Amino acid sequence: MIKVENLTKHYGHHIAVQNVSFTLEKNTKTALIGPNGAGKTTILSMLTQLTTATSGRCWLPPPKEIGFLPQYPKFYSWLNAEEYLMMVAQLSGLTKKQAILASAKVIEVVDLIKDSKRKIEGYSGGMKQRLGIAQALIHQPTLLLLDEPVSALDPIGRRDVMNIIHNLQDTTVLYATHILHDAEQVTDNVLFIQDGQIKEQGSLQEVKQKYGGKQLEVVFYTVQDAMQFAAQMPSKVEGERVLLSATRYTMHQLLAIAAPHSEKIKRLGWKEPSLEDIFLEVGK
Amino acid sequence: MNQPVWLLMQKEYREIWRSYRLIWLPLVFILLGIMDPLTTYYMKDILQAVGNIPEGMALTFPKLSPLEVLSATISQFQTIGIVIVIVLTAMMISKEREQGAVALLYIRPIPVASFIWSKLCSMLTLVLISVCVGMLASTYYITLLYGAITIRELSIAFSLYSIWLLFVISFALLCSAWCKNALSIALSVLVLYGGIIVDAILGQYWTISPWKLPHYAVGVSMHSVELQDVWLSIISSVMSSVIFIVVAMIAMKHKKDTVTI
Image (cartoon, rainbow over the protein chains, first blue to last red):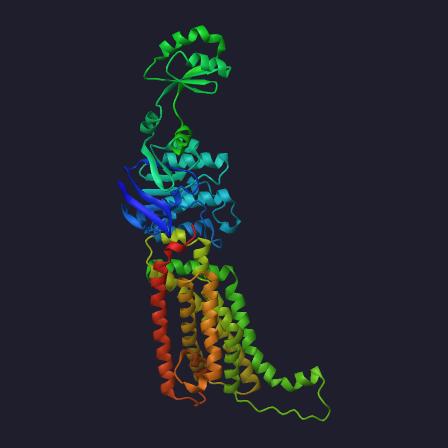
């Protein structure tokens, strides 16, 4: 279990992070979500001890059990991927034999087999990002910290990286992101951060429940029709969409209410608030 | 050898090799090494070839001993050669920190001492190889044109100059661990090269200092210096170097915050 208590970082008069507390259960995946400048990178760099916290306490695994991927990973450009990974694996405590096996495995996982003997200086941004993930995973860390792991990637690269994260079994993952669609696919828990403070946290389901839970959505062709329909019952109107609480109405009841308006309705069904909806709500 | 130091040294040696430093730095010192024996010996011919010498003017040059020419060679190393060494060393840690590559090593359980030792050993190896081939090239022409230099004389000169280089590299590494890249270079050049200039102008007022070692490197064989001064200069250089290295380790530990991520 990873525990962070009242973590604070001041840069002169600027407060980057203030009294951040959270707990990460073993082998869970948590998304640290927030706008640019919210303090996500500062939190991760304090957890990796690259930055010293002004105050607060952390209970973390020892450094050799932590893997870290910065947003823009930098490497020694004169080395090739294989040499680099062999070096970091051994510096993380693996023997030479273990390092050979581990580097071959991660090179395969991040799909760099063809380029593993090329100098890193010739790598594209996406290849560097994949090498960054490889170096973070090579020593099989129990805690993996990722800072915007997919922000520099194209859609295929993003999908591949999210699959890698999704398939991690015995690792606790904390990853900072503002690409919410991807986060939603792999995350168990969310931490919303804004202006250096945690605004919301919990499991994905808990947070979704808090911000409306499962809802019934009726989409009309026109805004007027939607407003007319909404006036009949407690509901929320968003343009042509009318949202009704799923705890108040069943689908059966909804169909009965909607039947007289069927020619005005485009579609209807279940809807859950997305991370993006919650992100926008928290940010208000 | 301690494993992290060895692994980090491998990284440094690969950079030295792949950036062609192991080729061009020795070439610089070879060039500096052969410059004085050749130009001094052929000065009369060079001046005559250049022309503009009034007719009838007699050109007389003092006959130099082999050791005096070797001393002039070391003076050549002390100009351009030493500035290159200072600049290369002063960038070693600060540049890596500013570019951010070291961030992915800082998060691993590597003792700070390993970083400093790997930098010190790799740079010392590169510079000593360069100076050694430079001195050998110089000795070849000195022997050919002026007379023999014994292995003992050459070994003493190389050993004393190596201790001076240890002092230079240790101080530049400290600056690199402590300051940002530009400041590190400026401070190293100012103190080390400034010291050379100060010693050249006012050096007659003291006899014990690391800056005296390049002068003593040949002075010992020429019996023109007190051995006690040489030993005390050696001790002061080695002790200063140890202090610089320890402070560099402390500085590096406290400057983790400045790494770019």
